[in-house]
Image (tube, rainbow, N blue to C red; front, side):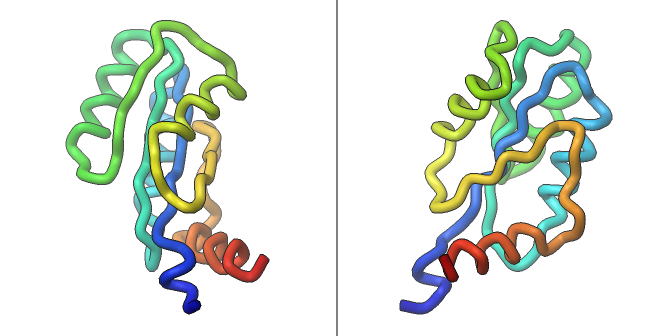
Length: 117
């Protein structure tokens, strides 16, 4: 079976909580990934209203980014578990909202590693 059939796509999950600029940078670094099909799921954990508005507006303008929100912070493990269930991809990658992918081929490289294992 070739690699294309084994790995269809990747879900990137990002939790947000009041770090508007950092979260946007994380989302943009995920959007910059090349040579891989991906969807981005942003789960807000009770951010202030302005932060939620800015992030939701950004996500809503993009076809492959999906927004969800909690009324309160469920913590990193709870949020990641919840966000993981939003997608349906073969691979789930969690990106902290204060982090960015090192380069635009990280997800492609990750796909290769998963196929090899």
